[in-house]
Length: 310
Image (cartoon, rainbow, N blue to C red; front, side):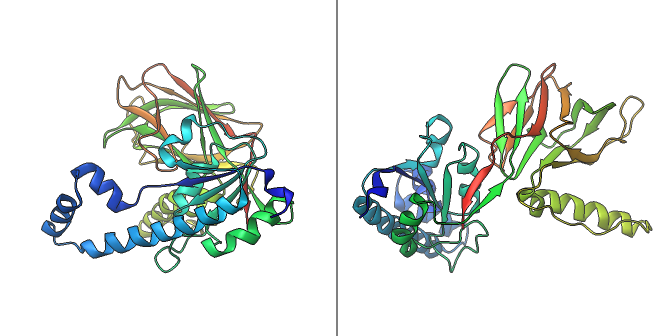
C-alpha cells in the first residue's frame, strides 16, 4: 500500500451481549441457562456474536496489511491518548461512535456497521468490506466529513465531560433533583427529574422524546400553540436544554425550563442534593461526574467539533 499508511489507525471495539453475559455468569453454559430460563432466544445472542466476530476479523486483516494500528476496547477510551494524526474506526452501533467521538480532538472517525441486517445505524455508513479503499482516501484527505457539535460540562473543581448526543444532569435514581439554574440574567431554584442538554445530533434522540411528550400533553390539555418539534442540524452552533417534570413548590419555580445554550451564554447549575446527583453523557451512566451539594456545573458548546467520515 501507499505511504499514507504511515498514519496509525485505532480500531475501537465493544463487547457483544454474549460476551457481557459470559463475563457476568463465568461460562457459556451458565449464560445460556440464564437466557433460556427467562424464555428468551439464546440463538440470537450467538448469531450476533458470530457476526461481530466475523466483521472484526475482516477489519483486523485489512489493518494488518495497512501497517500501524491498535485495537482498543471501549472501556479503555477515557484513559487513552490519541495522536493528532490518528484515524479512528468504531465497530459497533451508533452509541459506540458517539462514545468514541467525545474523546477525540478532531481526528477523523469512521463508523463501521458490523451487521447491517441487524443495525440501522445513522452513524454507521460503512461495512468492513469498504475499509481497504476507504482508509487510503481518508489518509489523503479525499473523503468528505461531517462536523458534529459537542456539548461540554465543566465542574467547579475542574473536571470535564463531553457529550456528542446529550448530557443528563440530575438524580442517579428515580427521585427529585434539587438545584439552582441560571442562563444569562435568568435564574431560579428548581425541583425536577433532571435536565437534558442536547446537541444537534442528539436532538433526534432523547430530547425529541422529551419534547414530543411535552407537546402531546399540552395538546391533550387544550393548548393551541403546542407547535411541531424540529430537530437541529448536527453542526448547529448551539445546544438546547429541557427540564424534565419540573415541580412547583413554595421555593421552587418552573419558568426556566427550555432554552438555548450558545457560545456567549452558558447554562449554569448548582446542586442542592446531598447525595445521588450525577452528570453523564450519551447514555453512559457508568461514566459520570458527581453532582452533589455545592458543586456547580457550567454547560457550554465544546470548542472541539467531532469529524465523522461519510
